[in-house]
View 1 (cartoon, rainbow, N blue to C red):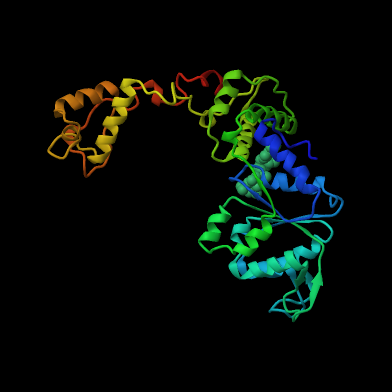
View 2: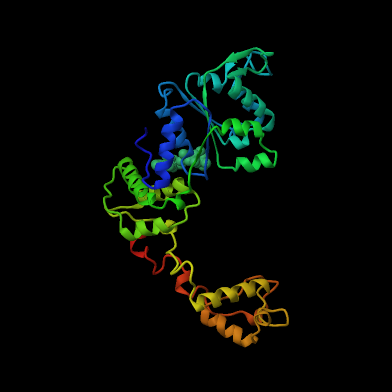
Length: 345
Ligand SMILES: Nc1ncnc2c1ncn2[C@@H]1O[C@H](COP(=O)(O)OP(=O)(O)OP(=O)(O)O)[C@@H](O)[C@H]1O
Ligand SMILES: [Mg+2]
């Protein structure tokens, strides 16, 4: 198993267990998970833990190849099958003989090709383009991956149900990073070590507040996004202490997630009313009327809370423009005064 599979959370350990289970059997595997969660890494780990590990792992990204070329790419073609087909060519299925074919972005496999893949999985036979029905036997383990919801695509009839069930014999679902935050400090340490080595640097201190801030971040791009942030940090760190680029420093965590202070609640309410009124404060349809206060009271509150109006030139009258700068509320600013300030450059 690859030593590069980092993670110790219960969710991640469960995935690793699944890798061993599915590696021991032959059926197709469907790996689902958000972008950057490690689907390809897991596919390689399954291959590496299987009896096929000495044969090839052949990846094919279904989204990266034009639909018209995909069939020949998968199954190969005979000489003269189409203009430019000057010689018989093996497809990826045959290239993966005895090994594993990794079909990435399987949700992008065109509908017309789906029955052909189903046949390859069911009967272990493929037909080269232009071969006029001559089937070739193949021994290939298919691992497919997608960040799309295939079950929903089946409901919407953009993905064939029979192929879905055939692929989903052994499902592996990768949890997003925000659902296994315990793994973040481990991943940070791993990536710092990897990139520091590559860049021939010695970075042996990772400030706690930096790790804390990274652990709080939602990471919509998952492990890949974290990896990129650390690579940039290592690139720009000059001493032994890791520093994040200011642009990459996640905003400090809010004071409290569930309970707002009164000022925060008031602020949110006013901002919503202003938004609804297109930034207009006074008048019968303005935010003040919606909130049941006078225009001057609302302006005073806005100044106190540091709220400026939505800058819609059609909606804001010049005379009403407030001079107060935005973001007076320190909780709504990023970086300044936050826990990362000492660790950013
Ligand atoms: N658990 C992990 N340990 C170490 N590195 C990881 C882990 N998970 C992901 N990575 C790294 O994060 C990057 C993204 O992983 P990968 O390419 O496998 O994601 P993916 O799910 O296939 O993403 P996409 O859907 O965007 O193709 C890779 O460089 C991979 O090595
Ligand atoms: Mg991928």
